[in-house]
Amino acid sequence: MADLRLYRTYRYIDKNPVIDRVRTIVQDEGLFKKLGIVHEISGVATSTLNNWFHGDTKNPQHATIAAVITSLGYEEQFVKTNDIDVERERKVAADWLAKQNSGSKKKKNKARANGHAPTRKRK
Image (cartoon, rainbow, N blue to C red; front, side, top):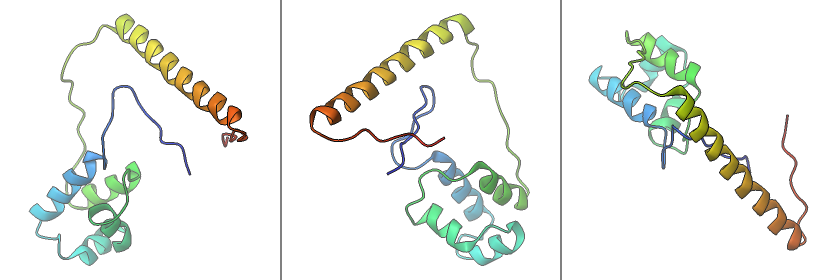
């Protein structure tokens, strides 16, 4: 099983919310029941689209999302919503990372205590 990557400032429970945003775009364009057309103009496989909207895909690749939205005439935008204190955020991030690493070490130690060999991370 692959490790789930967690980020301190970006979390979701089930599926990446970008899937819902793309679904809304496809619906607004009247193509939700015509995913074959989305495939034709974007190059993204209909099976991929079905997995996003109806299947188990939880976190689609950015390039694939971009291929679909740009083929439908949309673009991504990054909008600044608040100012940040960089030094404060660095401290909060370091504390969060230390807590994550601490939890990871506890899991490895528990696995060793139960006679399980630790798994190696892929590079």
